[in-house]
Amino acid sequence: MVISPQIRDECIKVSSEIPSAVFVGAAATLAHLGWGYRRTGDLDIAVEFVDDADEGKLNRLQYRKDPFTGTWYTPRGWKIDIYRKDVSGFSTRQIGKDAVTISARKARFRVVRLEMLILMKHRAQRYDDIRALMQRKFNSIDWSYLESIAADKVEAEEMRNVARVLRLL
Image (cartoon, rainbow, N blue to C red; front, side, top):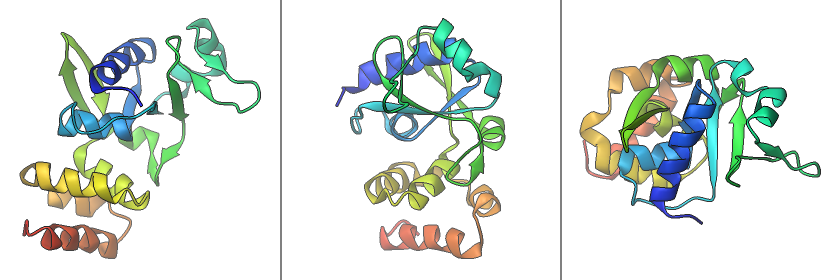
């Protein structure tokens, strides 16, 4: 696992190489919660425009694909999962359209919107991340937006129930 400043710096580099990249997963969680929240050994990105991350372009950028596993690595050796169609039921176009911009070290990169990240974490059953996002960012959650992107009313209500259990509502 790698410490947070290295993750942030790699996000900056990847976003300069793959312009439509939107960070999802651990990097997005760290960006929303502050870079000291947790560690990760890989990056997950949704690519809004598939041409930004086709195999030829990635090879020209010196990204490396493991021939045995098909796993991609950045030029600096980070494992990177690249989503070209959807992530946890959200299209990469929607993720890109609704992404937020993070400023760090005089650079900028995009991460998935908080409410979408919460639902992604819910669908992936990452309960520690959900709890942390809810507790630390509760006042920033746009519940109307969350309800509009939830799979159904039950999923939205489940998120409200999490907030109740955490005594935030």
